[in-house]
Length: 278
Image (cartoon, rainbow, N blue to C red; front, side, top):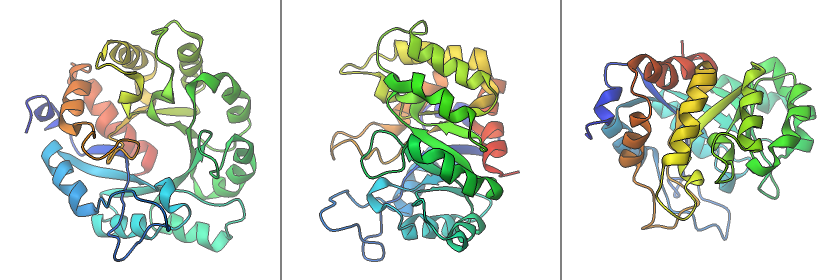
């Protein structure tokens, strides 16, 4: 195990709040034409054991759309003490199906402004009214350049909101650009959480973490109580052979959080509260 990964030891049950499962394909085949490589719970466990991850939030891959078979099977095998889920549902999903997902450990649903065919911001108010009684939140993945359009929608939702992947903010502007300031403002409402996941989206074409690190440090100063972390394994946007090194990226991330108490809050305490592990 890498030196910095060891820094997560002793903090308590570390939670990866954003991971996907693909397959096994003999039980859970993808729709025809989708070529995403199989990545099973066994594959993920090999990695999570290496990194000292004890809890996981499995996020329904867009490839499966509303077929949650693979995700639910992984959650059931991992067990209620170790797994939660985030679903993709249609606006007309029957109430009975929503309740069944909740009983299985699903805690929210995905809104994706960047993917055709997925629920978008326009769908958010109606679907939020349906899932609010279940205690679910809405998880939003969008283009950070559009973040100015989000507050008006979020303010009207009867649910909490979790923003994916550091808001997928555009590279440049550091902590002074309007997109980052907008993100800080959303966290300040007390209604919004932020996933420090897929941080490589802020790298552009290089491998310079300085701007991402600056933003993460500023976020911890502003609202450390609203931050969680995730791998985004198995990195579906990357070609085979060009996948990020999860251990190296975890090591890099931990180096930005030198304080043990801060690490415990983001890796253990916040996700336990958000996803109902305790």
